[in-house]
Structure formats: structure tokens, C-alpha cells
Image 1 (cartoon, rainbow, N blue to C red):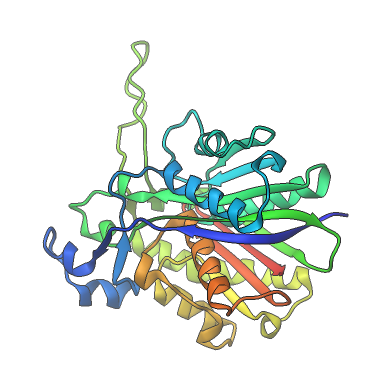
Image 2 (cartoon, rainbow, N blue to C red):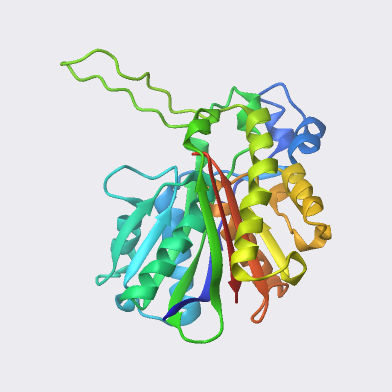
Length: 323
């Protein structure tokens, strides 16, 4: 059976950097308060870019790095919870912009697990009848942030990252995965609620675009469920925790990452982070970290890597890759 091979990675961050010190000028907070609770010092925030703009730049980089023609792509998946619009999808905008005329394109909504879920769909597509595609996690979360709410505004950043994937029969690719959703806990992390104002019914739901979260419940969920899901993926892959070279976790909170590393008895340097510079970029975060590590040479062919996403839904996804 054909398997998924990661051919190249790329990332795009807005130029504007908003530090904790900058936030302290518009809300009651400071760098010590934010960093001690989250591990975040700054985040990148768009000026005049939208989600598709960041995603297009990632897709263009992937084509340039590989020398692959856009016309040879079979599919484009954009994982996002902050699309330009419901229709056209952000992925369709990317497809049109890069001239990938033979590719079908769609968005996937799984919040902070979006990159992992997107890779799962791509793996299934490649295992059946397709040969090549792009998976991008892209977010402009600054559209969904109430900039007067210091409990959420300090957390999120904008960015995009992705990979170009192909079929292979080599001894690489996705070894195993475990995806789980806990919809009964979904109210603990909400954003982007639409109102229904049709003239034939009463108000069905209030309109509220902003993030709202029960931080304590989300933290408890992550530290409890993420290790369970990751262990299932490791067992499916017949891989021990020691066999994994790097664990690339969704970059939500430094304390969550540290807690999971300790749970598996692994050294902290196998759980790299970049949320100090980027904040929480939801579906973009794992891809951003992956490309960081590829560029630095820390991650390279022959290694075993774990991708672990968790967040809104509530969702968790863990994948074990041989790259």
C-alpha cells in the first residue's frame, strides 16, 4: 500500500511582532504574568493579511523548494478555524492563486488538532488513488480575539505552515495514529459563533465571534487525555517513548508540554517549543515548529517524530512518523 512521505515543509509568519510589553499598554497585564503562566513572550499579528495570504505564501514556498509544478498537485487541504470566509474555502483561494488547476481543495476544521487531522486525511487520500498534495495549517486568530480580554488575548498569534506530501513505498511515512474527539466538553473552548436572524424563527444562537475558554478545564483535559492518546499511537506503531526522536506538540502552553514530557519520562529537549516567539497559532503551530526544526537541522530523514495536536472540539490527535 502506498504511504505518505513528507517531501518539504515551509512556514510564514506576519512581520509584525506584538510583545507582552506591548499588550501591557492596552490591557492590565505584564510580561511576567503572561510568561509564567503560558511560556509566551510575543506573538506575530497580521497587519493587512488574511488567512489565505499566509497560506498562499506557504504553498508557493513548497513548490519553489521542490521544483514541483502546481498542476501536478492532486489536492490541497487547509486546516483552519479562522478562514477568510465560509465560501470560498481558504484552500480554494490557495488553489486558484497558485494555479493548481488539477487539484481539489477544501478546508478542515479541527482547531488546534487541525494539522494532525489534515495529515490523517492526506494519508488516506494517498493510500487510495492520489499521488501528491499539500497540507497547510493557517490561522489569523487575531480576528477572533477580544483585545480587551486579557485571559485570551495574550495567548494567540497568527501564522501558517505546511508540508508537501507524496506517495512512497519506502520505509517511511505515517506509522500509526490515534484521533479522538470529546464533544461533550466542547463548551470549554468556543470561538466564532454565528447568529441566526432569519425572519421565520426566534433567536437560535447569539452572535459572538470571540474566543471564550475555561482555562482550568482545558489544561486539565490536555494533561489527562493527551498522554492517553499519545500512548495509544505509540502502541499501535510498536514504538516505545524512548524510540521517538522528537515530540512536536501543539504549542498552547509550556506547562502542558512539560507535564507530558514528565509523564513519559522523557527529557525536555525531546519536546521542543517555540510558543515563546509565536504564541498559540492553533492549526499552524505543529507545522511551524516542524519547519523550524527542519531548517535548523535538528529534524532530518531517518528520525521518528510524533505530531500531537489538542484543543477546540475538544479534540486530540497523535501521529507517529518515520521521516
